[in-house]
Amino acid sequence: MSDTRITSTQTVSAIALLSWYLLAGGPALAASPNLWWDHLGPLDVSQAECVAKGKQLLSANNAGKIRAGEDSLHAKNDTTISVIECLSFGKGITVSVVVSSNDVEKGDKLFNRLKNGMTK
Image (cartoon, rainbow, N blue to C red; front, side, top):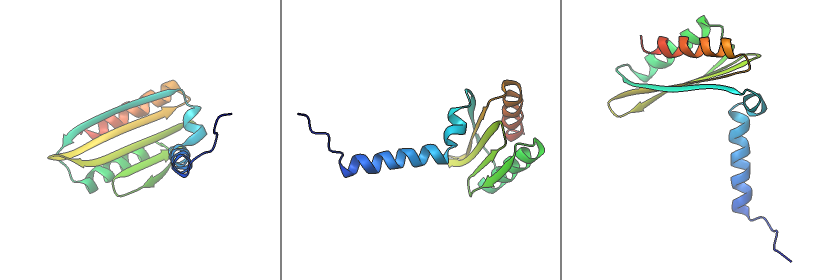
């Protein structure tokens, strides 16, 4: 008979993975088969300027309800989840843009607008 006990380390790892999955969009993200991702930089802007520009772009493109952090933005509407990360890395700010959407055309347009807008 095999030993099927789960250790506390395995339990903590499973809880951490599930928490990350749910915070990252959970079922909505998993149900969205279309994903666009790119990173830009390093850009010669401050982290605050990067976040402000990302927030303006998400608002201008009706990306949905926006949650802002010190270095990141998350927007979600009925069909799309968008993330902009402004990370201090090396000599500048590296920007990651991620869009996941059930609507291929809208997702692609939003991704390109965010990506191009962050580099202007």
